[in-house]
Amino acid sequence: MPSSMIRRGIWAIGAAVIVVALVVAALPLIASTRIVRDRIAWEMSAWSGFRVAIDGSPRIEVWPTFRAILTDVTLSQWTDTEAPPVVEAERVEVDLSAMAALRGDVVFSTARLVRPTIRVQRTPAGLFLPAVPTGGRITRSIDTARGVVNADPAKPDLDKLPTDTFGTVEFRDGRMVASIGGKDVEILSSLNGQANWAAMNSNATLSATGIWRGESVALDVASARPLVLFAGGTAPLTLSFKAAPVTFSFDGTASMSENTYFDGQAKFSAPSLRRVLEWSQAGIAPGAAIGSVSISSKITATGGRVKFDNTAIALDNNPGMGALDLSLGAQPVISGTLAFDTLDLRSFLSAFTPLVPTGGAGPGEIDTSFADKINLDLRLSAAHATAGPIQLADVAATAQVKDGLSVFDISDASAFGGNIQTSLRFDRKPEGSQVEIRLLASDIDGGAFGTAAGMTRLVPVGTGTVSVILKGPGRTWDSIFDNADGSVSATFGPGALSKLNLPAFLKHTEQGGFFALDDVSDGTLPIDGAEIKATISKGVARIDKAEANSAKYKIWLSGIASYAGRGLALSGGVIQPDQAATQANGQQGPNQSSFFVGGTWSTPFISPISRGVSGE
Image (tube, rainbow, N blue to C red; front, side, top):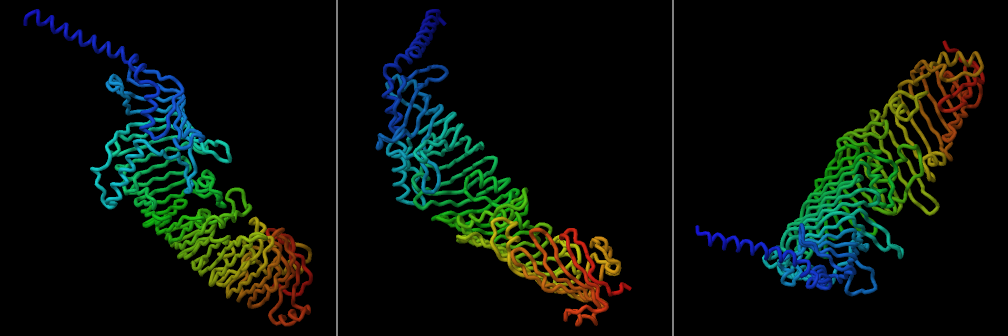
């Protein structure tokens, strides 16, 4: 190759390098003269639809990327000059096109908002959202897309959607504020994330993290056709929300039209429902801190109504299946059916009603405000269930909450070898909450029933029926039983009285002096039957009749037993059957041993009154 050609090639390459170097060196000068502050503000306004103001002078950087750095940037509504800005950012970094800048144009694809303050407003649905712009390329694209959707809502022509570019918006160390009571209140802090939307007719994603009410939260949203979604059409949508108290996800299709529509698979899980309600400040505090709650369901939502089909629900790791219906309004209404293999009834009540006492600290004040904030009508069944120490099977129950009334009914269940029916209801009235408790246990094993109720002394061991009715005011769980009125009755067939050594008992009464019932509890007395009737008044049980009959003896008790103080004041006797008529007429027969029972439920003592029955 001739040397002259080589020299000319070297000169050409060198000249090109010099031209490129001069262009790069001139970019800041060109930018400072032609891409001025007003030009950038105008382009951002046309892009966003807000009135953009830049107080600081733009600073142009060439390396590593060509970008403009703007300070003290505000985005405000065009129609309300008195309103505070929708967005305020200490700094905005805009990636610019170098070639467009040389032509005198402003073209950017990425904007980074550093320490922005985003002002939001509470919507009627309870969400906090920023004001919607009244113009701009985004708004015009949505209006155009709305026309495409309206032309064929079932299958809009996607080729007619606008193709305007959007780009990427990043935000760092931001916050959201809302005006509440005339003051700015911080809703969200430490806001970081980005929105990616290359073109109006392409897919879009949003990822954000922040701190809400003291908890770190993460939100991810994506749609293959976001412009159709914003225009009121139906489009795919995935959403994921994660925080320590709760996680939620949705994968399906949605419509953001006037009649909002969702159809897809939703999942919800929380380690503690009580923590979720406290964190969300819903104003509903369940009575006990229950364990985990998780729900997975096919949902269909439209017109303020959400249907949950093929719902899998787990309460404290007790799985169940069913269907639910949620109607949204001034008072949400939840109805449906749930079926469990195993179920902890305390957990169920904690999750859906205020009908259980506070968990760890013992009896506490009952929160019946739940009944003023939600309507509930649930039917449930369980092959096996527990209520504290009580084991139940084949349970059919309902939970209802409406207009200040909270009710939980077990209409049928197997327990203690028999069948039980029970009802617990709270009626919130102006003068205070009224409580009613009913229990009917039929054909049950008295020994098993007494053990579950915490009564192990003188309990008839045999098949019988127990009925309990209690009514009265109740602000706390203790006060319900302290102030209740009602009745208790029980009848038992052949069996035995547990923990009673009758010969030893009679021997002690013959000897005189006080003795503890525990001293004669090392035996069992066979009986032909037993009957108990008591009237409850202000938490005090007056025993009208308590009799146990054996082949040789008849044992009777009468008197009062206090629930509040656990005190006993009873009189009783042991007589032979042929002396029953004499005792019934109030006369002391020669073969009767009478005694007084005092002390407390846990430590009763016996004081003999007379002696006459032989223990042999």
